[in-house]
Amino acid sequence: MTGSDWQDAYAARMMRVFGTPLAHLVRGEGAHVWDAEGRRYLDFLAGIAVNALGYAHPVFVEAVSRQAATLTQVSNYFSTPPQLALAERLLRLTGAEAADGRAYFANSGTEAIEAGVKLARLTGRPRILALVNSFHGRTMGSLSVTGKQALREPFEPLLPGVEFIDSTVEALEAALGGDVAALIVEPIKGEAGVLPLPEGYLAAARELTARHGALLILDEIQTGAGRTGDWFAFQRAGIVPDAVALAKGIGGGMPLGALVAFGPAAELMGPGHHGSTFGGNPLATAVGDAVLAEIERADLVTNARRRGAQLTDVVLGLGSALVTGVRGAGLMLGVALAQPVAPAVVTAALGHGLIVNAANPETIRLVPPLTIGDEEIGEFGERFAEALRTVEAVIEEGDA
Image (tube, rainbow, N blue to C red; front, side, top):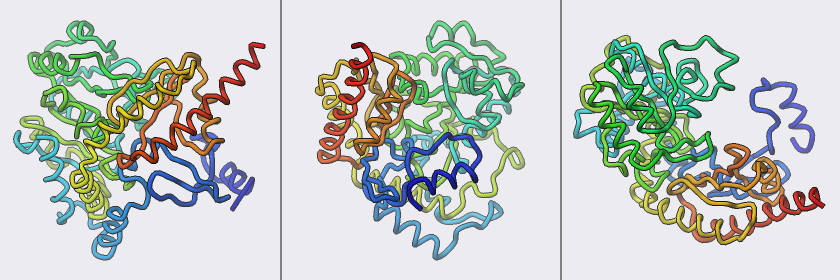
């Protein structure tokens, strides 16, 4: 299926929730994908921070093949070796093991947040705090704690008792009280434009929520699994949350989500409080465990930290008047633009064989596979420079 064939088929058969696809992709390898016409693209979006090992990584392929030949789905009336292995690995990597933590498995990030919202409700307190301009998912519970009014408005009324505050310690201090069940935050607001929380915010949030007896629930769906140059962003802040929602990179391309709870928070959920038919199935958990094991073995967390600094230098070294800075951590970076032309840069980049994303009109998001090296970064620099020059020429022509 080539040319307008796939576009016509998509328009006729798919619900109109995603807009027009940018291309019709048929295969991938490493950090590259190919479309139906055979054109190759360097993918620095990686399924939106999902494909931690890139495409068709031998570890991923072997794990899928091995597990598919034994068990794929058995329901949560039974346990399986991959489920327990992944739970143990996540508890160890997050540090929840030392706090007598527990894991709950789901199929996506929005489901992990749903579990976190239920955890908050089980405290018996009526108020949940979240941040303005945050994003936690699109199901009704996760949307209820998403601080983007344009996304919320078509589906209101949503879950009551949720309040949105500014990302400042002062706003948190003013909002907290004995009736607050939880504060739910992203360490870096990905969909808002790769915006890190203010320095010291997480440490202050941990101290303040503990003082008021509220849960601190972290959304590390995008920042987790080594993406920011630490296994989890909260570890850099030197804190221990009450729960952390995970997805994206922990499955490396397999639909997989998790909520890991620490200490007393891990005991709030009881039989019948929550569940998922496919959550924790042996296929997904076997792949997730293999992906995380490979990130450990290859020390891709260190690679993310090192390549993120290298990538930042490359972007700033392009000398483009459109680029005003780079923010983020590790391989979760936002390129700040001087004008609201990010969608145009994305289109131009695609034309030059590069896949990136506009997190907002002024920000290009870069979340490539954690496996990238010198070759991919060099190729990125060339293609991104071409894209920026293309947009700059259009701007200059319009000003003439």
